[in-house]
Length: 126
Image (cartoon, rainbow, N blue to C red; front, top):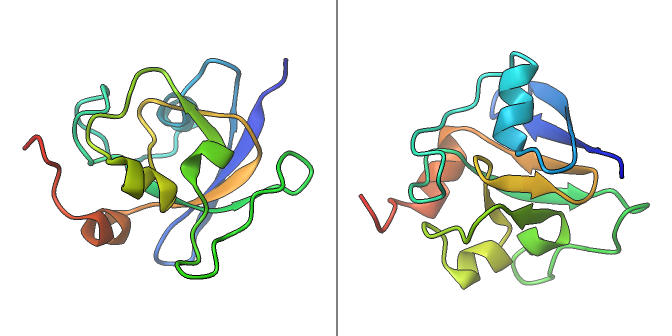
């Protein structure tokens, strides 16, 4: 079993690619590599660490953005350690992913930063 590369895309155009090992979360891989991501609970109960899936490597998945929203269901690239309580099924289907509990299942690109959290709105838990 091999890991996957997740490219984190920041609003200023910066990109950081982290190699996420099997059973490791994106947040754990980023912190290991010295990439600072926002996070708080580390349990999937807030939206501080939220990202939005932009693309999935075609070699690993045939996922494509939906025509109406331009988003990809997060299930195309991520599995979770536990159910992401802070996201609805609709938000997950729109590509939102909680990076503190998300384990990569494919190489992909994810938008990160405060603008993504602002798109999503406040967590229902806090």
